[in-house]
Image (cartoon, helix red, strand yellow):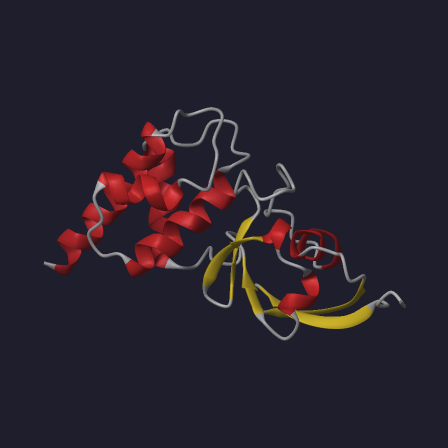
Length: 163
């Protein structure tokens, strides 16, 4: 049995096409950090447990350490930095700062991406729904209350803006 050889892929990373030759086992996390030079996506556990590497692939949040780079060929990827101009992401970043939801900051990019993806599809979530949505992202510093407070505040401001 012959092993599959390296392949050339192109991935839209934060709106910019990145083409590279990748090994079949290269993860999307490795591709984004090492090939595209986008280091706001962090490598935590590298086995899908912590959520630190969460980014948006074709509109869905994914743990990029669990996705092969080749699976993202001809697809679109967004990271927290790529979404900097997005009003919802801006509101979340401000809320995280205001509520003290950022301590060491290592989990923050993945947490923000997960929160933004959730709030984009859930108009008036309660605290339990927010906790559930963020449950795949681990934080060792804040104890989660401040993170949930920050996301809940943005959800509440969105709801009042619609009223």
